[in-house]
Length: 337
Image 1 (spheres, rainbow, N blue to C red):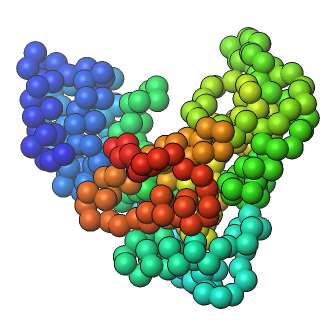
Image 2: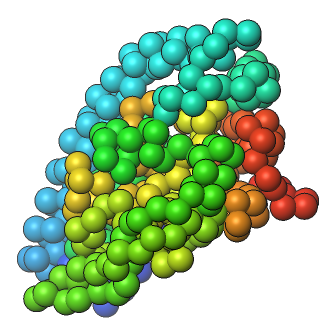
C-alpha cells in the first residue's frame, strides 16, 4: 500500500466526525505491510484526528502504534540469525550434492545422481535455497484470526516457524520417495485410522479404529481443528500424508502427516512451513497423489509473489521425475497465488 492509503482511510473513517475502535482496525489494515513511512503517517494522522476518536479508539490506536517498532526490531533480529546460519546450511547443501559422492538425505535415503544434478544446475542458475524462518521486515495488522493485532509474517511462508524434527515430523517419517510409497502400498500394516470426532466441552477430539491394511498411495488436502491423541494415525482409507508439501535443500520431498500434528507441539496444526525444521527449502506448496502417482503440484501463493518479483525456484517436476516418481500425463506446476 502507500501513505496515501493511510490518509484516505483516516478521512473515510472521520466522515461522520467520530472514529470508533472498529474503524481503527480498518485504518491499521489500510497500510498492508507497515513501512517506516506508513508508520509515521499513521502517527501523524492519529494526532490530527485525535479529537474525533472515541476514548477506546484512541487507546487502541496508541497501543498498536507502540508495538510496530518492537515487531520490526524482532524481524530484524530473526533475519540476522537466519543470515548467519545460511553460511553453514549452504555449505551442507553443497556437500550433499557433490557429484559421484555417496550422500544421503536428511531422512536417510541415498540421493540419486540425477537429483543432485537438478539441484546443482538450479542453484547455479540462480534458484533460491531459502529459509522459512526469514521474516518480512515490516509488520502488519492482522484481523484474520480474531482480535486484531500487530505481527510479522514469514517472507516465504506466512507461518514462519522452527519445528522440531521428532515424532511425525522426523525427516525419515515425512520424506516421500518412490520406494517408501511403493512399500507402504504393498505391505499390510496395523494402524489407527480416523473414524470421527467426539466433543468434550468446547473441544473436538479425533476418534480412531485400529485396522490392518495396506497404504493407499493417496495424498490430498486434510484439515481439522480437533486434537489427535495418536499423531501417527491415518485418514480414512489409510492416507498417510496431507497435501502440504516442500522440497528441502537436499533435494528430498516431504509432506506433513495426515494428523497434521506432532507430539512435540500437540496444540499446533502443522503447515507447509513446519517442514523446514531449520533446514533450507527449494520449493513449497501442495502435492496430490493417487495410487502412488503424482497428479498435482502447486506453488504456494507466497512463492508466486516472490517469483513475480524476479526470484527463481527449482523446477519441482524435474526433481519429482529425477527421483523416479510416477507422474500423471502432462503434469505441470499450478500457481496458487
